[in-house]
Image (cartoon, rainbow, N blue to C red; front, side, top):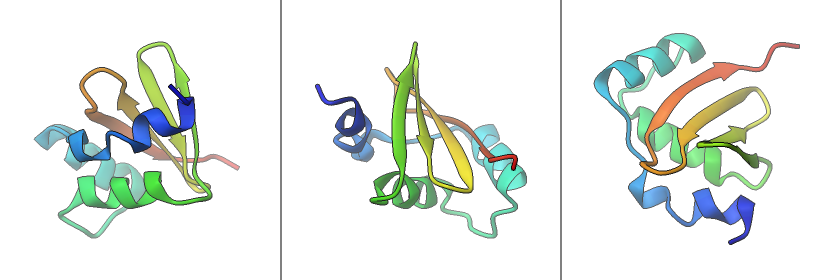
Length: 83
């Protein structure tokens, strides 16, 4: 399977926990209640670079990196890229 498409092909499985959503909103200063939808949009962007390291996918969307568990498709966290 193409590494880039493995995550994108399974975006319908993407989810997070309540604590995960709070953490992502706090880390990225998001003003939305649909954190999973926001992550899906970022991951599906043409400019997003997706890599897999061990059990996690890392979606580098320019100004942030979204970490997703490769087996359960749970969005674990997201944080801003430090410049």
